[in-house]
Length: 106
Image (cartoon, rainbow, N blue to C red; front, side, top):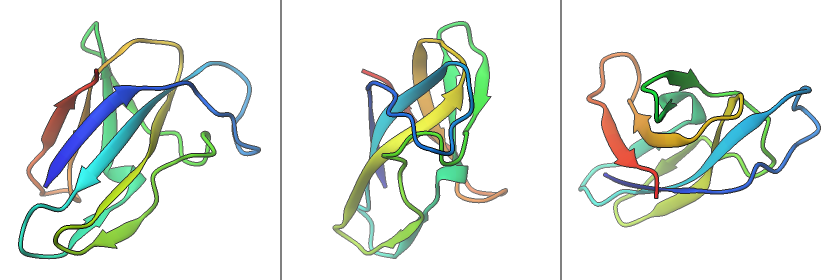
């Protein structure tokens, strides 16, 4: 599995509350031999101060979907957290016991 992350603007959905949000555009690619699950809840954002931020579901209208990716497939979408900050990296962890995969935000 490969993850790429880059800065993007926040696109407020009807579900977003008041206040600031930070979104990162991520692309997940299944470069393995088995199906992998992708879910927005598997992501966290870490800012340049080292603070970890949890995902705000449904806040950005371009949120990454919950899907199963077959080998060779990819999906792109946003991961969004509440607050205004500069995202340093995004971390993907498959479930509670999965190994984390981290990608720097460019």
